[in-house]
Length: 507
Image 1 (cartoon, one colour):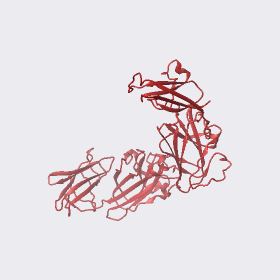
Image 2 (tube, helix red, strand yellow):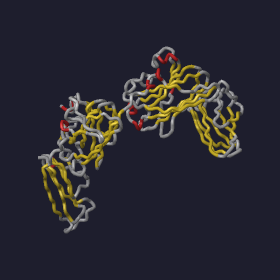
Image 3 (spheres, one colour):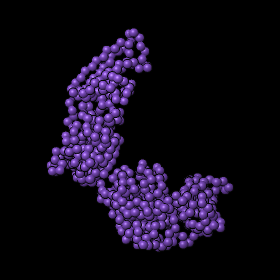
Image 4 (spheres, one colour):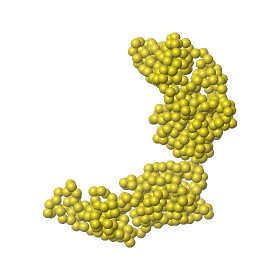
């Protein structure tokens, strides 16, 4: 019968230890694949207790390479004992332990969840952490894979509204995992096609979208993992956090307006946003990108009344999931009817222009500048990573927009710069732009260039270059910080041709 097999080696030599092997195949060759080593430590142990289902077991007492053996120190005594091992109460799915969150009372179970789940209707973050062990658990049928030679225990909960469900398993050696299954059909057979595996091989914290349904968590050890007494203990942490409804501006006709109109002057605005939603927005494809249920897009609107340069910058709160976000820009009022295909709805910038569709690292953000005419512009911030629609730590972003009129552009000749007073111009292909700046006090100054063409800027103190920045087709803006001294004039130059592509023109 399934038992706890205890093995103890006593010797004056500390490096005399024991391995426990399982299976009659070990008799022909203890190193073949069908002979299973159930010892948790590769170097063996002096004292250990292992889970031993009915089979043939061999104990190999050995001295490792660090042993110093003599006639007196090579002697040992070996003690073996077996104790019948009762199965855990939750070693089958129909006896899954209910997960009740602290502060929540167990409600009367619904007909569909009677007997196998705790009913939760969260209004705030709910979490529970409990301890368990696989020691004594039985081998289960295949769960979420074809591998059936695994042992595990079951937990369940009933979710009553769309929430973010987080599951984490921690153990002494990090070799225990969890599968998360969904649906009452799992009760009859967790390996059936009607039982949905929604998360597999979860060890470190994993978050998923949970709808109003019964969920089961199976904590298990891989078939190649030793289930010893010391390594079968685990902690299971489960948390549940309700998700808000989709934000109003998930639809283009509810786009949030950007206040960028101020005739003849520079304007900028910053808005915080979040992809967090109780359902993916099923956003339409925009500029040939996105669309479907696996992502979310939020809309913003800029009604511009004069010609100028529009700059956009997107900063993410979390960047572990990369190459997932993009900003697309449409032009024309007809976009309101169908942003993906309406006649007269023009894609000004999108994935085909390589705008804001690149990875954003750390605290850095990507930006893009492009010329605009008087018209209505629609900006969508899109993620094609559905995880950011239900993970609170990874859903937030910052959108910054700036508009600089170019109705009165500066000439290529030297122009005086002052703090917080942007100037605009045209790269006309005839001569470089030259600017000067006279600091009124010592310190550090940031100089930012946004251009619709690849170009660069150079900062000079006399004849010495003290800073430079490039504007590429990917970034749209370049920034450089320089040290300045009171009364010591700086010169800033922009070449008359585009930088890396030698393209003329641009703003």
